Image 1 (spheres, helix red, strand yellow):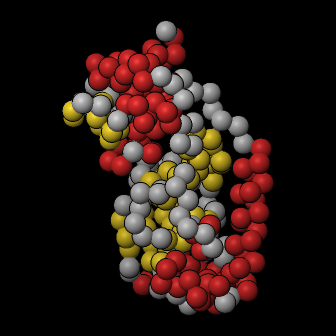
Image 2 (cartoon, one colour):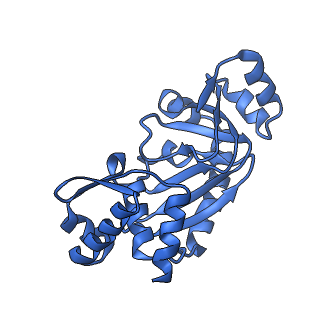
Image 3 (tube, one colour):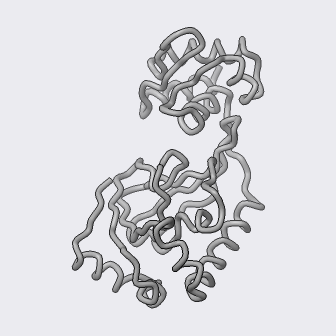
Amino acid sequence: MERIYDKKEIADCLAGSKYRSVLDSLDLDYYLINYEKGEFVSSPFQSELLFQIVEQGAVDIYFVRDDGTRYSLSGKTADCFLGDMEIFYPRNSSIYAEAAGRVTCISFSVEKHRKTLLENNRFLEMICKSLSAKIGAMTVMDAAPASLAERVISYMKYKCADGTLKGIEQAAFQLHCSARHLQRILNRCEAAGLVRRLGKGTYRLAQGGKTEKTFLKKEEET
Protein backbone atom coordinates (compact mmCIF):
# COMPACT_ATOMS: atom_id res chain seq x y z
CA MET A 1 0.00 0.00 0.00
CA GLU A 2 1.27 3.44 -0.93
CA ARG A 3 -0.29 6.76 0.06
CA ILE A 4 0.13 9.68 -2.32
CA TYR A 5 -0.20 13.31 -1.20
CA ASP A 6 1.11 15.00 -4.35
CA LYS A 7 -1.41 17.78 -5.10
CA LYS A 8 -1.13 17.50 -8.88
CA GLU A 9 -1.69 13.73 -8.90
CA ILE A 10 -4.67 14.15 -6.59
CA ALA A 11 -6.12 16.96 -8.72
CA ASP A 12 -5.71 14.91 -11.91
CA CYS A 13 -7.46 11.92 -10.33
CA LEU A 14 -10.32 14.08 -9.01
CA ALA A 15 -10.71 15.68 -12.43
CA GLY A 16 -11.21 12.27 -14.03
CA SER A 17 -13.57 10.94 -11.38
CA LYS A 18 -17.21 10.17 -12.18
CA TYR A 19 -18.07 11.92 -8.91
CA ARG A 20 -15.98 15.02 -9.44
CA SER A 21 -18.83 17.54 -8.92
CA VAL A 22 -19.80 16.00 -5.57
CA LEU A 23 -16.20 15.72 -4.40
CA ASP A 24 -15.51 19.33 -5.37
CA SER A 25 -18.53 20.45 -3.32
CA LEU A 26 -17.13 18.73 -0.23
CA ASP A 27 -13.62 20.25 -0.38
CA LEU A 28 -12.02 17.67 1.93
CA ASP A 29 -8.45 16.54 2.61
CA TYR A 30 -8.19 14.01 -0.20
CA TYR A 31 -5.24 11.75 -0.91
CA LEU A 32 -4.65 8.70 -3.10
CA ILE A 33 -3.84 5.15 -2.07
CA ASN A 34 -2.31 2.56 -4.39
CA TYR A 35 -2.85 -1.12 -3.54
CA GLU A 36 -1.16 -4.15 -5.05
CA LYS A 37 -2.94 -7.40 -5.92
CA GLY A 38 -3.99 -9.34 -2.83
CA GLU A 39 -3.83 -6.41 -0.43
CA PHE A 40 -6.92 -5.56 1.62
CA VAL A 41 -8.43 -2.27 0.46
CA SER A 42 -10.89 -2.50 3.33
CA SER A 43 -11.12 -4.95 6.24
CA PRO A 44 -12.22 -5.09 9.89
CA PHE A 45 -8.56 -5.28 10.94
CA GLN A 46 -7.79 -1.77 9.68
CA SER A 47 -7.76 0.77 12.50
CA GLU A 48 -8.52 3.87 10.41
CA LEU A 49 -12.01 4.44 8.99
CA LEU A 50 -11.64 5.54 5.37
CA PHE A 51 -14.07 6.38 2.61
CA GLN A 52 -12.56 5.25 -0.67
CA ILE A 53 -13.58 5.51 -4.30
CA VAL A 54 -11.97 2.99 -6.62
CA GLU A 55 -10.72 5.03 -9.57
CA GLN A 56 -8.51 2.44 -11.26
CA GLY A 57 -8.49 -1.33 -11.04
CA ALA A 58 -10.96 -3.78 -9.51
CA VAL A 59 -11.70 -5.17 -6.04
CA ASP A 60 -13.34 -8.37 -4.83
CA ILE A 61 -15.86 -7.73 -2.05
CA TYR A 62 -16.95 -10.60 0.15
CA PHE A 63 -18.69 -11.37 3.44
CA VAL A 64 -17.24 -13.93 5.87
CA ARG A 65 -19.47 -15.43 8.56
CA ASP A 66 -18.17 -16.48 11.97
CA ASP A 67 -18.10 -20.12 10.84
CA GLY A 68 -15.71 -19.29 7.99
CA THR A 69 -18.38 -19.48 5.27
CA ARG A 70 -17.57 -16.96 2.55
CA TYR A 71 -20.12 -15.10 0.41
CA SER A 72 -19.04 -13.17 -2.65
CA LEU A 73 -20.85 -9.83 -2.77
CA SER A 74 -19.36 -8.63 -6.03
CA GLY A 75 -16.33 -8.03 -8.17
CA LYS A 76 -16.30 -4.28 -8.50
CA THR A 77 -14.45 -2.20 -11.05
CA ALA A 78 -13.84 1.56 -11.02
CA ASP A 79 -16.29 4.00 -9.40
CA CYS A 80 -17.41 1.76 -6.51
CA PHE A 81 -17.39 2.99 -2.90
CA LEU A 82 -15.76 1.43 0.16
CA GLY A 83 -16.46 2.73 3.65
CA ASP A 84 -19.94 4.08 2.89
CA MET A 85 -21.56 1.92 5.61
CA GLU A 86 -19.08 3.20 8.20
CA ILE A 87 -20.46 6.73 7.83
CA PHE A 88 -23.65 5.62 9.58
CA TYR A 89 -22.82 2.41 11.44
CA PRO A 90 -19.96 0.94 13.49
CA ARG A 91 -17.38 -0.95 11.46
CA ASN A 92 -18.74 -4.20 10.02
CA SER A 93 -16.64 -7.10 11.29
CA SER A 94 -17.38 -9.40 8.36
CA ILE A 95 -16.96 -7.50 5.07
CA TYR A 96 -13.65 -7.48 3.18
CA ALA A 97 -12.50 -5.82 -0.03
CA GLU A 98 -9.38 -7.22 -1.69
CA ALA A 99 -7.45 -5.77 -4.63
CA ALA A 100 -7.87 -8.01 -7.69
CA GLY A 101 -4.91 -6.24 -9.32
CA ARG A 102 -3.26 -2.84 -8.94
CA VAL A 103 -5.88 -0.45 -7.53
CA THR A 104 -5.92 3.32 -7.05
CA CYS A 105 -8.44 4.94 -4.70
CA ILE A 106 -9.40 8.49 -3.83
CA SER A 107 -9.47 8.41 -0.04
CA PHE A 108 -10.31 10.53 2.99
CA SER A 109 -10.93 10.05 6.71
CA VAL A 110 -14.53 9.32 7.71
CA GLU A 111 -14.05 10.31 11.34
CA LYS A 112 -12.39 13.62 10.51
CA HIS A 113 -15.06 14.68 8.01
CA ARG A 114 -18.22 12.92 9.28
CA LYS A 115 -20.09 16.16 10.12
CA THR A 116 -19.35 17.66 6.70
CA LEU A 117 -20.45 14.48 4.94
CA LEU A 118 -23.75 14.24 6.81
CA GLU A 119 -24.57 17.86 6.00
CA ASN A 120 -24.05 17.48 2.23
CA ASN A 121 -27.26 16.38 0.49
CA ARG A 122 -25.57 15.54 -2.80
CA PHE A 123 -23.10 13.25 -1.06
CA LEU A 124 -25.88 11.56 0.94
CA GLU A 125 -27.90 10.95 -2.23
CA MET A 126 -24.84 9.36 -3.84
CA ILE A 127 -24.31 7.12 -0.79
CA CYS A 128 -27.98 6.06 -0.62
CA LYS A 129 -27.78 4.74 -4.17
CA SER A 130 -24.64 2.79 -3.35
CA LEU A 131 -26.06 1.26 -0.16
CA SER A 132 -29.32 0.31 -1.90
CA ALA A 133 -27.36 -1.60 -4.54
CA LYS A 134 -25.30 -3.40 -1.87
CA ILE A 135 -28.39 -4.39 0.12
CA GLY A 136 -29.96 -5.74 -3.07
CA ALA A 137 -26.85 -7.83 -3.75
CA MET A 138 -26.81 -9.23 -0.21
CA THR A 139 -30.41 -10.48 -0.46
CA VAL A 140 -29.60 -12.80 -3.37
CA MET A 141 -26.06 -13.91 -2.56
CA ASP A 142 -25.20 -17.58 -2.11
CA ALA A 143 -22.34 -19.02 -0.15
CA ALA A 144 -19.59 -20.63 -2.16
CA PRO A 145 -19.46 -24.38 -1.42
CA ALA A 146 -16.73 -24.97 1.14
CA SER A 147 -15.19 -27.97 2.86
CA LEU A 148 -14.39 -27.81 6.55
CA ALA A 149 -10.70 -27.37 5.66
CA GLU A 150 -11.57 -24.30 3.57
CA ARG A 151 -13.67 -22.88 6.38
CA VAL A 152 -10.91 -23.45 8.91
CA ILE A 153 -8.40 -21.55 6.75
CA SER A 154 -10.96 -18.81 6.12
CA TYR A 155 -11.81 -18.61 9.82
CA MET A 156 -8.17 -18.22 10.78
CA LYS A 157 -7.46 -15.73 8.01
CA TYR A 158 -10.46 -13.46 8.52
CA LYS A 159 -11.74 -14.04 12.06
CA CYS A 160 -8.63 -14.64 14.17
CA ALA A 161 -6.34 -11.78 15.13
CA ASP A 162 -2.94 -12.20 13.46
CA GLY A 163 -4.23 -15.42 11.89
CA THR A 164 -3.91 -17.17 15.24
CA LEU A 165 -6.51 -19.69 16.42
CA LYS A 166 -6.63 -20.00 20.20
CA GLY A 167 -8.73 -22.74 21.77
CA ILE A 168 -9.90 -25.83 19.89
CA GLU A 169 -13.24 -26.14 21.69
CA GLN A 170 -14.28 -22.53 21.11
CA ALA A 171 -13.21 -22.61 17.45
CA ALA A 172 -15.02 -25.91 16.88
CA PHE A 173 -18.22 -24.35 18.25
CA GLN A 174 -17.90 -21.43 15.80
CA LEU A 175 -17.15 -23.79 12.90
CA HIS A 176 -20.03 -26.15 13.73
CA CYS A 177 -17.86 -29.25 13.97
CA SER A 178 -16.48 -31.48 16.69
CA ALA A 179 -13.24 -30.58 18.45
CA ARG A 180 -11.81 -33.91 17.31
CA HIS A 181 -12.61 -33.21 13.66
CA LEU A 182 -11.10 -29.72 13.90
CA GLN A 183 -7.95 -31.14 15.49
CA ARG A 184 -7.56 -33.60 12.59
CA ILE A 185 -7.88 -30.75 10.08
CA LEU A 186 -5.31 -28.66 11.96
CA ASN A 187 -2.92 -31.59 12.12
CA ARG A 188 -3.16 -32.02 8.34
CA CYS A 189 -2.72 -28.28 7.83
CA GLU A 190 0.38 -28.36 10.02
CA ALA A 191 1.81 -31.31 8.09
CA ALA A 192 1.22 -29.39 4.84
CA GLY A 193 3.01 -26.31 6.22
CA LEU A 194 -0.10 -24.11 6.23
CA VAL A 195 -0.21 -23.58 9.98
CA ARG A 196 2.31 -23.62 12.78
CA ARG A 197 1.53 -24.96 16.25
CA LEU A 198 2.46 -22.39 18.90
CA GLY A 199 1.26 -24.32 21.92
CA LYS A 200 -1.61 -26.40 23.21
CA GLY A 201 -4.70 -25.54 21.16
CA THR A 202 -2.96 -22.56 19.49
CA TYR A 203 -2.14 -22.43 15.77
CA ARG A 204 -1.05 -19.62 13.45
CA LEU A 205 -1.35 -19.42 9.68
CA ALA A 206 2.07 -19.86 8.12
CA GLN A 207 1.62 -19.33 4.40
CA GLY A 208 -0.83 -19.53 1.52
CA GLY A 209 -0.67 -19.35 -2.26
CA LYS A 210 -0.04 -22.50 -4.29
CA THR A 211 0.57 -24.66 -1.19
CA GLU A 212 -2.81 -23.70 0.23
CA LYS A 213 -4.60 -24.30 -3.06
CA THR A 214 -2.93 -27.69 -3.50
CA PHE A 215 -3.81 -28.75 0.03
CA LEU A 216 -7.45 -27.67 -0.25
CA LYS A 217 -7.80 -29.44 -3.58
CA LYS A 218 -6.52 -32.67 -2.01
CA GLU A 219 -8.94 -32.23 0.90
CA GLU A 220 -11.85 -31.98 -1.54
CA GLU A 221 -10.78 -35.21 -3.20
CA THR A 222 -10.63 -37.17 0.07
